[in-house]
Structure formats: C-alpha cells, structure tokens
Length: 444
Image 1 (spheres, rainbow, N blue to C red):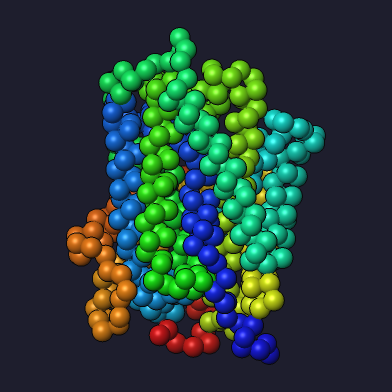
Image 2 (tube, rainbow, N blue to C red; image 1 turned 60 degrees about the horizontal axis):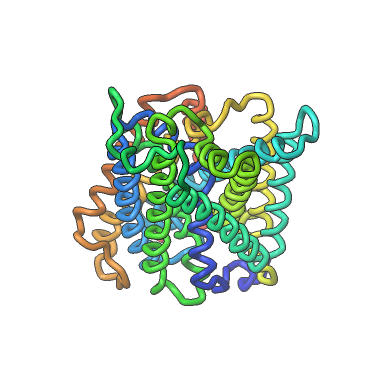
C-alpha cells in the first residue's frame, strides 16, 4: 500500500505552463490539413473565414462552460470527475475506458504518424520508416513525461515556442509577401458553385479541439483554481487569433480554389515565397506541431487513467502517483503501451487522417455532450456550492455548447464508416467490462 502523499498530485504548474499545454494541444497538425477540406465546403472566401470565426466562438463558449466546472470542481480527473459527480461511476468509467482505448491513445498514435511521415520526407530509414519513427516518438515523449512534470512542461514550452514561431512565419509570409502569385484581398470575394457550412464547421471544430484538456490540470496549478477561467479564455483567444490570421494568409496567397486543390497549404505558400527551402521548413514545422500536440496529449491523457485507477481496484495499478517526479508513472506506461499497439495496427491498416477522425469522433462528441449537460445537472444537484466562476448568460451559452456538440455527434454518425463502428464496438466492450467491476467508492 502506498503512502497517501504519493496518491495525490501537488500544485506544480505555473500559468505559463498551463497556457503552453492548452495551445500546444490545440494548435497541432490540423491547421495544415483541414483548411483544404473546409475550403472545399465553403461557398466563398468570406464563408471560409466565417467558418473559422464561428468555430472559434463556439469553442470560446465551451471554454466558459469548462471554466465553471474546473473552478468549481478542480480535479486531476477532469471530465472523468465531472461526469462522475453528474451521472455516477458507470458513465465516468465508460468515459475513462473510451479515453484510454480510443480518444487519447488514438490521438497520440495519429500525431506520431503525422510527424513520422514528414520525418521520412527528410530522412528515410527504409520501407518501415514511418512506423519506426512513430514508435520512437511515443517512447521518447512517454519517457520525458515519466521523468517528471518539470521535464514534461519544459519540453512542452520549448515545442510550443518553436511551433508558434513557425506559424508566425507563415502568417508574416501570407500578409506581407508580394508576388505575381498573390491572389490579394479579392480572395475574400471569390466564390464557388456550392458549399456546406455544416460540414465545414465539423472540421473547423475538430481543428479547435483539445482545449478541454485544461480540466485535467486544474488541480495542479500553483495559482489555484481561481486562475483557471482566465487561463482557458486567454488560451482560446490566442488560438482564435492565430487560426484566423493563418487562414487569411492561406487565402490571400492561394485563394479559395488554391487552398481546395492542395493538401499542403502551408508548404504551398512557403514554396511560393522561399522555394524548396521553404518547403523543407514547413515539413519541420509540421513535425514540431505534431510533437507538441502529442506531448501535451500524453501529459493529460495519463491523468485521466490515474483517476480511473483511484476508483477501481481492478485498475489500481494506474492509480499510483510518484510524488518525487509529480507524475502518474504507471498510467503513462500503460498509455504508451496502448499507443504503441495502435501504431503497430496502423502500420498495416491505417488510411490517413479521416480514418482516425472516424474512429475517435463519435465517442468524443458523445462524452463532450454529456460534459456540457453537466453544467445544468450540477447546478441543480449542488446549488449551494461556491462557484468562483459562472458561465455568463446562463442557460443560453451552455445550451449553445450542448447543441453544437449534439450536432457534431450526429454528423460523425451520419457519415459513419468502418472506423466509427469500431470505436462504438470498443465502447461496448467497456460496457461489458463494467458489469464485472465494482468501484472502490461511490461517486461524490
């Protein structure tokens, strides 16, 4: 039996650490991939930019909801803890199971493969270069986080700084580069025959995804839970500004049709401005972006697995907290093992970005919807609890957040393919497992 001091995280994170983690998770490889799909579903340059603005506003509303939950109930378990208080142990267990087997580990393997694919373009290790690179990335980043919270956050801040500097280069290039290939501001008025704003928003909101991971670090802030709302809001505002400027840079140089016709939009404008050197630079940038998101996902993912281990004896191995390194070492190791397994499976079966989206999206948006509804449920169940922050314009803003989550759940199932059915099957496996488990303690 471990000492109690080993089972609880201590406040180690500064505000800048928390902001770096949130920005690092959200601004990943998606901003270099999804603009092509968004452009294909936008009827004009103006609607293309509007989709990114609307997506940002919906994200900000969601952040306000999470700010209330995380300041009122700060806990390393994040969503897991909110769901446990709202719906009980069974729903919370299913979420933790899905996060461990689908959501987080799937994201880690995907991001590792994205980085690996671009590393192969720079230096090939042979026919299995991509899985070798991907597995190495999972191992190295997991090891960094096992070394302790200081190592993990230092790596995160360094990667985030490099990532932001690279994206600022793209923004500067798009806004100030002058060449015959420059489409100019008329790109905003460029129109196509058709577009689907709804489908565009699906991918926009996926690109904004990950900000909710802040809930998993609320109990580890040095400044305490009072600063959680400000951290979330400022992080989202920085991300919205970055995405709007980056996509305007794409639009200004390539135009709507140019964005739609190339999957490597960032590489295209860097090639136009700087030639081959620009193309290599953007490849390195995408590697850094993927590593940044992967590291942050590993950091936060292990913490929900740790919360699962605290509540269920069958998973108590995951509930061990190392006070010396201030990290859940066993949870990190198990998460890394599952991610490596997915990398191995992906070596033979993966078919790209959209397949992983199919695998993760239905389960992700289902639990996102339940967490949004928790704002209403916990206000009713726990009306006298002190709330340092309350969602403004309640109940309108939480309702908007829940409706948007429900729409994305519907969309992910409406266009369901094999990956979607597989993730639902994994969730059902968790349901069967739940019937054989008993929680160590009841939800509180």
